[in-house]
Image 1 (cartoon, helix red, strand yellow):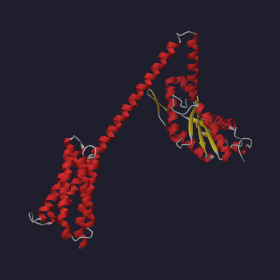
Image 2 (image 1 turned 135 degrees about the vertical axis):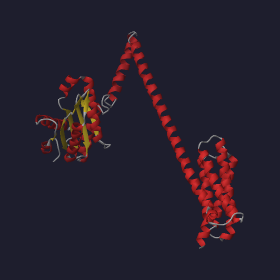
Image 3 (image 1 turned 45 degrees about the vertical axis):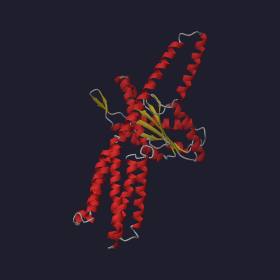
Image 4 (image 1 turned 30 degrees about the horizontal axis):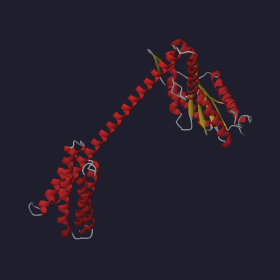
Length: 383
């Protein structure tokens, strides 16, 4: 049919066009490093594009010879580009060169068959397609190799940056220690400056929002966020949920196994809480000692209880190893959910959740209790 003949013209020229465009990008044949090769390749790409368009209008018998010529020149050009880049030690050019050898060989076989120097049969008529298929496979390998090298380079750069950051942090800490030791030896005037620096350091510590042991937000950050969320919930009449989490029998656990094991226990509980507090607007914080708090804005009581139950169940199921022993910790959780009736209802809401926590402890611990009476207190919650 007409399209069977014309498609060979169109697709052969498109192979040259896209192959040339791919080549100058993939093996970096730019106007800066190879100006003449770049211009020659761009001219070849435009010629192939014109022939591809002409292949839709001009008969096959008039187009096949110029198409074969462009395909041969195109393959030769791209092979030359790959050899030049290989000599420049471009790793991608290794695969690329072999790929275009296959494509060029296919073009040569097709050309020889068209000029009656080889017999015309199924293999010679489709030699270019076969060569192109093999070339595409090798180019895919080259692309994979390049992506792998870029990934390794990026990873190495990231590791270097982390090492430099670690060195800078250690140097900063060392510098701070030296400065503090020197300040202790200075006279009254320098001591006044030292007190100013200590005051500044205290302000910076207050601004620091992260608890260093657990990685959760600290109480100072929680208090600010809690106040802001209460104001927002009051203004927009949204339900705000607060969870107060307390590790059961933590004091006796700490006395029995020591503070280091107790610290590991706090980290484990904090990690479990993190996994279930995932929304951007939610907040998990260490409130103090073995007590944690979770803020869930715009969350009804049922949703807050579900989150609390998931936290409680995961902590109960988690095996906590102490030497040769495997322990299972438990937590008690108090929940308070309501739309605040006042913008300054933080203390009342916290007391509501705290009461629920004490009720959970009174009922035997390892449970979640929601303070449902809070919703009936119009001094705390909106009706």
